[in-house]
Length: 505
Image 1: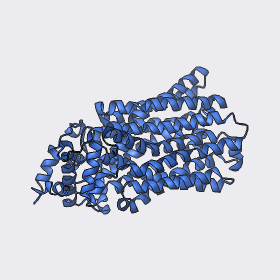
Image 2 (image 1 turned 180 degrees about the horizontal axis):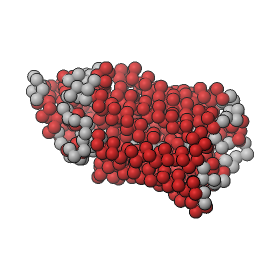
Image 3 (image 1 turned 90 degrees about the vertical axis):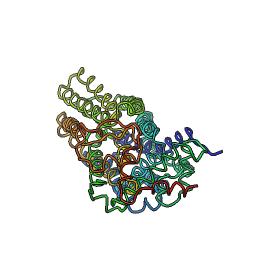
Image 4 (image 1 turned 45 degrees about the vertical axis):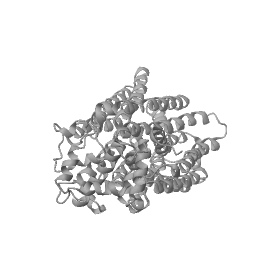
């Protein structure tokens, strides 16, 4: 008997999370190999600028991959592009592992990044469209624990490998280890269900019904949740087609009934916030920063990086426990406030330079990851996949994900130079950004927690951009009244909502 229900939801979550485990691992392993003498010699003793380039070209590849996913992902579905992206990751990892020149390593970084860009553009969409509404947020948040798992594995691997007498083996093994996770992903994805919403749009009603029933763990076609989900998908398609939201060019139009441009801008700026919260500047360079900014010795820097990874992993459980209770808006605002306080503390303690201040600074590094995990680890990826219209979800998510990667590139590129030249003042950059995010989120970002995927369309139906003080700033209760009223009010729309459901039997 095929896996279904809760077990399938868990397996789906783990499968999606494997791609983020790869991403998390890549965030961490560069921090360790930048401290290996053999690697630096092989790369031609790079300057701080070149060290930033060696790390950040991966994210430039991710940016290219996310943009390219717009060209073919909608035709190929959600699963096939992920398999293609994972293949590019494996090829890029192999090139990096066997590198004996700087140019070869840079090519490998770009190729692997291209694959990660494809994957991260599609996996949030695949997950959001496939999991049942009442499990979307909890299970969606849980999969991002594997980002932290990957980072933690890389930190501890760097620490363990630092005892190796063969420095070439030390950094090459750390690079090659990402292939293990890529092979696992290739093995598991084909067994997972395709997005029922993609199937529905492409006129595969029978398969849509079968997948939704599997995800809900029922064989009853009259099940209330199954019926509700199919009805809402059909209603969303009607709404989008009647109001111009079915072609990619419509992403850049802001018709009052659909407001696609507003949705894209919300997602794009949210990913900007993720990167300028400082996460990659710490994630890629934590060992380097602990050694060169805080003044700790080499082994202690690596050891603390490992423990920091474990702390990050534990902190990643927080969204799973609280998102459905306090909502995504409060997670984002509390996270931004906490991260701003942590960066301010880092700046002041590094300026002080005393031993006691160094201890406080290390604590701030650890607490930073707690607040990042609460607000910006899982929420932005879940949020962006939710707010985009069904027809344009894969293309729109590719655009918002590209923002993540271009700003990732910028922050990773600048960190070694800025931190080495500006010292404690460099940390104030992220302090200011994080505090500025709070009012922006409060004013403009609606709450999607507690709403079915298609019900979120109601948020953008003839509403204004400021949501503070409105019903859209509060959590939903999985009600469908809003979307029902919208569809009922469409010209010639009455009676059409059941036609696709009947075709499915």
